[in-house]
Each structure stands twice: as structure tokens, then as C-alpha cells.
Amino acid sequence: MKPKGIFVGTVGRFVGPGNSHVAESIFLGGQNTLVKQVEDVSWLLPPSEQIPKQTVENRIKLLNMPEGAIAYIGAAMNVAAHMVERSGFPSIRRRPEVLAFFWNKRDLKTWDVHLKNKPKSEDFRTGPDPKNDMDKWVLENLRFLEDGLGESEIAPW
Image 1 (spheres, rainbow, N blue to C red):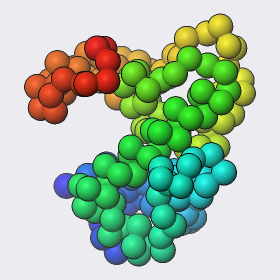
Image 2 (image 1 turned 120 degrees about the vertical axis):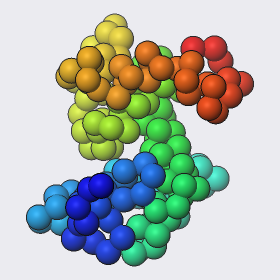
Image 3 (image 1 turned 120 degrees about the horizontal axis):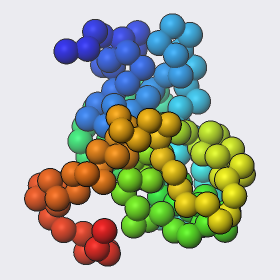
Image 4 (image 1 turned 180 degrees about the horizontal axis):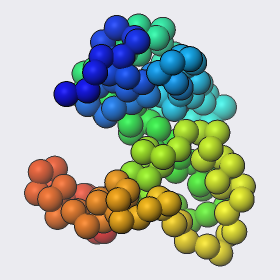
């Protein structure tokens, strides 16, 4: 079990089933995290795909519920995919390892920098240590994910 953090209902900087960041630093606070950034991307997404803006307390409540965590994770991955497509790269919507890398290692600011510095001809490399990062685990364990969640109806991996 992780020690309790500085925010009520959180564990360190993270909260809920998706371990969503609700603070930039356990010691300094700061709330410009990925989940907050996703609420603020009205410039990118159509209204039907936007997450409504929340107070910190409401965001923590939502992220503590599986439904809320899934909604934020899905919205964040959707924003990442939109950014990739707008930057002229092939879609990552059928690349669970890239989406897992994004969720675990980036926020919208660092993702934007990554896309601006990435050569258009280069495939998406993931984690700095692919042997230990979540993206590698996703690729190696897709069959277990499919056993638990069912096969994707979008596309074969």
C-alpha cells in the first residue's frame, strides 16, 4: 500500500484506478497535470468529446471511481491521438503501446514538444527503457488484455 498523500483521497500525487496525477509535485503541489490539461483542450476537441472542467475536489472524486478514471484516460488518449494526426503523423489510435507510453510518461505539453522534435519519417519509439516501461508490457501482454476485455472491434493489433 502506498502512503497517503497531501490531497484528501489521494495517494501521493496520484489518485484512483488509473493512478492519475492530481498534483505536479507531492511537495510543491501545482495542478497543471494531464487530467487538468485534458479539461482545458476545448481548442482541439469537438464539444461531444470534451471533459467538463472540474474543481480539484470534484476531479479527485471522479478519478477515484473506475468510470471517471476510464473517462479521463480515454479522453487523454483521444487528445494525444488528435495531436499526432494534426502534426502529420500516422494515427496511433490502433497503437496501444504508444497510447500506454503517452499515459504513463507524458502530459500535453511534453507530448507537444515530443511531436515537434520527432522526424516525420520515424516511427513512434516509446519509453526510455522499453524493457521496463508499460508500453513494452502492453505489447507483450495483449492477449491477457483481450482475455479480460475482449478483442478490439476497431482493428487487429
